[in-house]
Image (cartoon, rainbow, N blue to C red; front, side, top):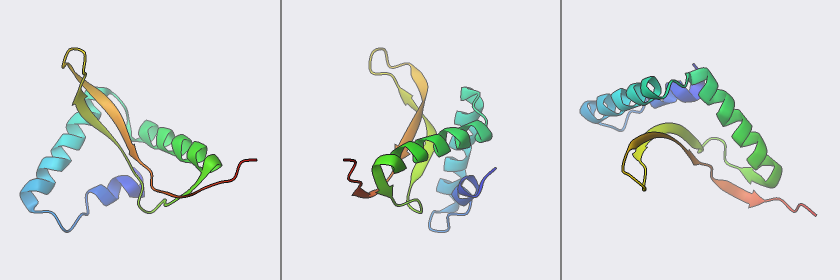
Length: 94
């Protein structure tokens, strides 16, 4: 487990009920998708490296997580990797 993964479990501004609900969702999504936290961290690192080639990013505020959503075509549930990567400045790549 990494520090980012542990940060999720230390949010102080949520009620206990909501925090417990979010923790359970995270555990269920990881369990159903067969993606280990280590593998997710590898994907996260690769994504950050690629985006860094083109932009300066706010690594303290980025949020990359695995979640569940429904497909548009048939509303079947599926795992989804959701990335929120704040861009500070786009690099000049000339």
